[in-house]
Length: 447
Image (tube, rainbow, N blue to C red; front, side, top):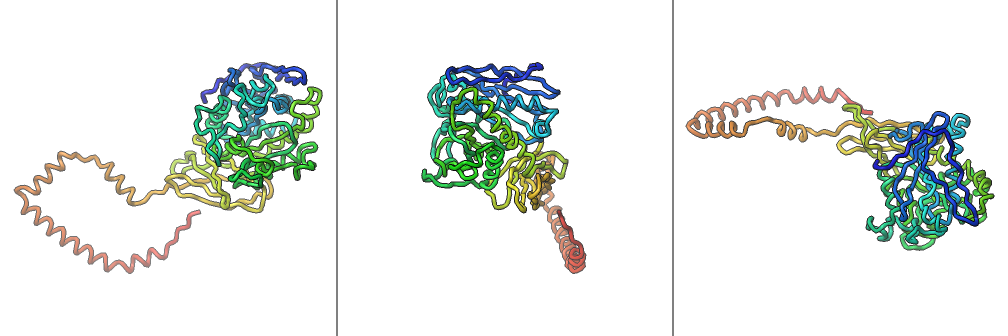
């Protein structure tokens, strides 16, 4: 992937980062632990303005490998003065290490989800204790926007923004969430509206996003009992419109369902409050990741010709959104809210599409598609012509031979061929009724 991989076998845990209300202290994350038989990887996906590496913790029973498991990412500290998410993601990594062989939920996540944690997207802003990065740019306004021409020049974007965009070009994340501070609510797309008005502006997967947001809110200690936000969730544009945000860009351009989570009313609390904040958010963080394998439709797309995986596309009838299967393994993961039924359609250029109906009222569905190639008679004839290994010089000499001194012989051959063709047509006319009767008695059904 072009990322710098740091892999050191060490039997130690990630050290806790302590956020103090009176100082800016940080902990070096450039190490990896080998704990209880499974690995963590630290991956540098880029650097900040001041050259600090953006380090991602990769948690899986097969780190560094491309798998058919869905991938999930958490990003913290997008705004430098909102460090609680940074702390909680370190705690999350520690907890998964400690409980992999002890807790069923930890085991479920490690073995069935490829989890990535970026504790700090904005290390420079954290060091300066300000919202923006070292260039004083709000990173959650620095992504291309669907409604207005913002940040269309990739070279002019901040290095932290470019690092995230390149990261998502390398890895197909099924879902993700960013951790913010200053409120207590789970926010979902769209973040902006077409006319800049503050109003509910839902995306095609509004039901799925409301379900995702509710998982976090109802697993939280008190988020769902919010007096400001019904059930502790909100549509972004209904709260306040913003443009150039990372959440909408993920959904539109990366096929990734992303939430923006406001996890603490106080942006920069005293370090003594961190254990309480971890306790309040722990089950929300875990259940949101686990939801990838507890619902939705998952599977692979194959070719019926050779059985090889196909990088096809998955759509759901009535939802204007496409999920792309992996180029190597042909795997797809489509997050959906539980309900009676969905019609799922698999397509691939050069192949016949297939569709089927699934029910998601009780758990996830595994659905593989085997697609048949779409080949016409015309294409076969054209292919045969191109495959013909003819010698152009010999053909030219043969034509010259026919149209030269042997013109009379050529004329006689034409007369003979015409007579034979006449006899053949008469014979065919006699057999037409019989042929139609036979063809009508046979029926082929493809499932």
